[in-house]
Image 1 (cartoon, each protein chain N blue to C red):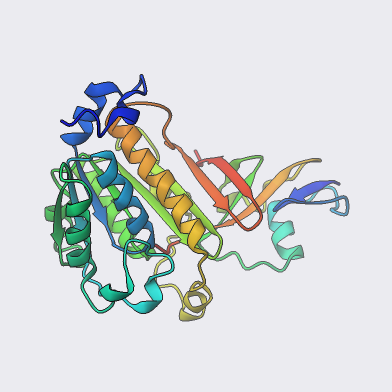
Image 2: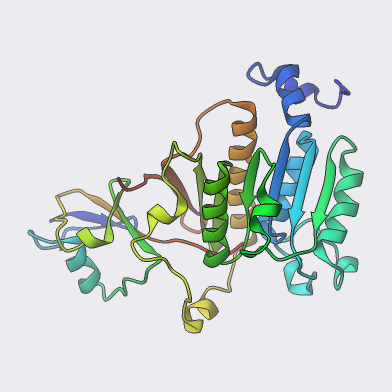
Length: 68
Length: 236
């Protein structure tokens, strides 16, 4: 399945693949200030393992910044 | 009002002389006097916001200068708010600068935040941003919250009772963050500060003028390193 993650396109993602699977595949720690958007819409954290990704989805891993 | 001074702003049909008068009568609170605030205050004063209050109790350090662009080398060691009051008062005599040499906390937040038309949060930690969020909601005062580190930053505008707030972004609030993460968070690209600050400041000005579209129920995320610019809808 083709996904764009943080602007990087890859065809190597399996089908039946959730947001939670993506984080585990990339070994990303789901710190509280990490939020994820799919096609410019937020995904609630409690839905990470229930949200299945679709072909051509654009996923952004966004670390909310606290600095000023 | 000196019409010549504001000619190019008032020439914009959405603003006009009436809009400029609104700005000259507006009360804006800036919380924090770091990089985001430094850039913002230059514009707030120049554009003619009539009453600008600033809260900060920090002293200028030499390491502040690359991103806190209002300060000079000779300002190092002085209180930020003292220098800001002096410089901004010279910049535009229509803009009245009032400073509070305090750190915002739960004991003084309501007193300092009340009676403003809009609040710009430029603090440097989540805990204070959440405090600003809660107090502005309780006082029914619109606010803009922004943050930056490394090359990236974000801005969100909140109109109480009409929009999702800053806390709604998080499932678990990022407070009491482990020190190891804070150390990773110290690098910052000064130009990202400028861009995020200007977006936040523009949100405040547009709100005061009641023009354009605000980042309400949305968050803008900008990464200047990779030229990635996004507007993301907040969760339901």
